[in-house]
Length: 129
Image (cartoon, rainbow, N blue to C red; front, side, top):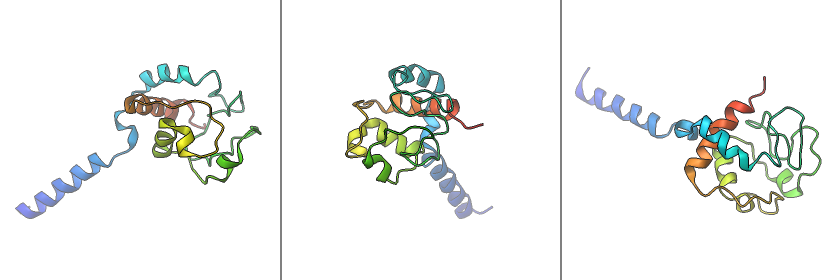
């Protein structure tokens, strides 16, 4: 392998690591502790809605479409957001800024590590079976 090809492969590998999923640094065990701030309003079990919608199967779901939950704001229904690690990170940082007119009363998680950990936990705990 020539030097230029080796350099190109090294660059591609470095980019893959840097641009990897937002969850790369998340710790699900720590995220479970962060979820304590959420569990008064959100359940993880399928079909178990509380004040807020169940988070079961949230990854890949369009915002405002949790089965059986009827109290979504018009803003969240019209947002077009599909929940993934990136959109959850932005939403969890400042819900009212990410979706203007949303009803989520939670101010947000300021620490990126808390958001990453919570997202890692939610990815595991809410996975549709």
